[in-house]
Length: 362
Ligand code: KG4
Ligand code: ZN
Image (tube, rainbow, N blue to C red):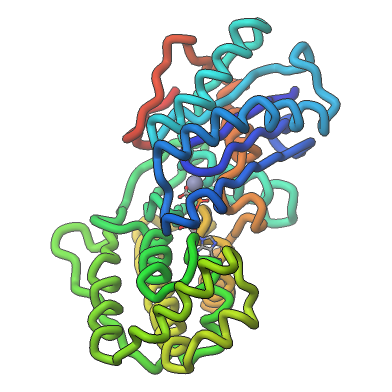
């Protein structure tokens, strides 16, 4: 049974065809990185326009690559939220119109559930499938959430960020230091060249839910450190580099980055990873997790992967492959498959929901 899925919640226009919830026949992603890179972050209006331009060719390519006709589909899935409302609207409206014209039923998928299902789908093809209850740490540019995942895909929110998401912290710190957007991949590549114990960052104790996160203080601490260490000239030089070359390679970045900035990046990344894994381990212990799922764009981070694998946790840790970590539509098709089996179809009246929480769809 084939599902065509469309994802357009932020700044990637993506379409995929997945068979039986496990075999990815095609997965096409049109990134808007170059468009938003100039502004150091996603510009919602430009994102909607880019989605409009890309959605038809991206869907066509996903169908062509998988040799699928609309008549072969069991369902058409689309992300309904959370995300930028103008971006969501483009993918969802196109999915509705395809569903209406072809008679193939529509399935609405929560973007966060998609990230979790990317991992469940891939782990399902290995010798260590996800066991329940599982703990899911969803870390992306928009989310830092801990969910208990029970058998049958029931979710309970255990903790979340009270301010910036982890990926947002990577992006903001990178921007502050004159690196491009998105910052996470650049920090990831440069951090191993610095000393992660050079700058000690501390996190305030959380009042209330001890499983909540807060990353805005860390960003401010980086700013204070930058102000105290006279780094302005090097930051300005990197901004000039970026204007001449939108995506410098590692050699160019390293030539423009003094040792103490590399130490700062390494220490910042270490602090984020430590914070994520400490709270995830505490949550996993509280609920008796049998698998730890780490999903979302920040799950690409090689330092996070290394730290999680070497932490000798008493349960397996499952990460998505990089192509399924950042936004893609195969994860939306994977999340739609159990809904197809349960006959959970969406009405063509369904609206995009910018602030959708997990457990509201269905
Ligand atoms: O899941 P995603 O593509 O979009 C959202 O749903 O937000 O995640 C994008 C985020 C960005 O903040 C980006 O900087 C971060 O994931 N990211 C990384 C890495 N690759 C992407 N953060 C740290 N290390 C990486 N290697
Ligand atoms: Zn995402």
